[in-house]
Image 1 (cartoon, rainbow, N blue to C red):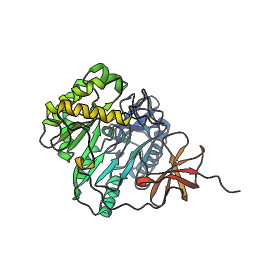
Image 2: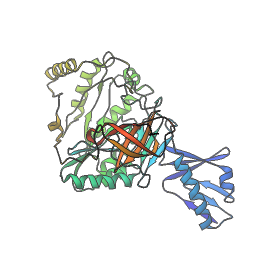
Image 3: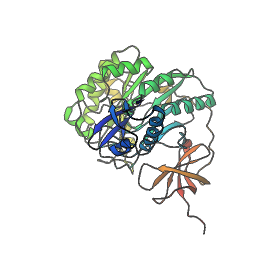
Image 4: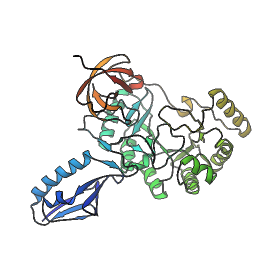
Length: 411
């Protein structure tokens, strides 16, 4: 008898196939006849048993099924195809704004382990969530993130670094989040680990687990205390009382800090912002950071744009007005978040350069591909179906985030 067990896979028997869940929120399917060809079988939560085949043979054959399944991974949230980015995937972690690692030459490093969101916010700048038009999601291997982050920190030669976990979506969809936080907080140069979250998936148990792992600051996107307005902005069912209670629990802990990060959406929640300011102060948010950081809604080409953005001058005028009324600082700079400039990560190529790159997989929207060149990840705008090596003219290179256009092959 052969027993094949996995820590990161869970199996569920369904009609004519088995559904395999990878890291809880992603899945692939295994047809019954694929398993029949190995031998007599049955599935358990984290294992598949074969009764008429040797352990070695079963492992070898089932490994091929799993490899195929991982290449066909889908998100359980929106059913989007999902690319698993791991150390042997050929996809560098620096170069993309949606996943991987982003370094803007400062002591604040962004880590983005997953894309996708459990909400459907009407203002989402990157069109994430339940009705997202993005065609591809990304899931990054934990060990790959940690290894590449250590290399970057070693290069920067800086102390008191903050690593911020922020995604195109909700970080709580990343099931090894606590392990990721623990390993990042264990890096000697890292002083703080912070995270963006909408709070809907945070339970007291999960919060305690993350805090023990070393997550010290939660940036909570609470946009209204009114249930109807909060649900309208979330674009789906939304339990504002649960999120309020979560905010109180974070603020009450001695080892965690909280900053509320509402979006000011003109004509929708302007009247709610003063209530959020008072709520943040009442619960004791902002022990070592601002209690509230109000963000101006901005129109983006590929985002959701339910209203026209407020001009910057008007936004800052409104901030100053609320500062006077509530006696609280609402306009911040890098120094307020203890961000310092560091050694610059080299740009292997610059805007206007033409480089040869290898197409690896589809990008987030229809005419995009993800390519690799010189240990960087490039989003390439090109015709669908493009594969292999291509010549790319770069149209963006700022902060080692690269976007390029595919050039026609010479005849």
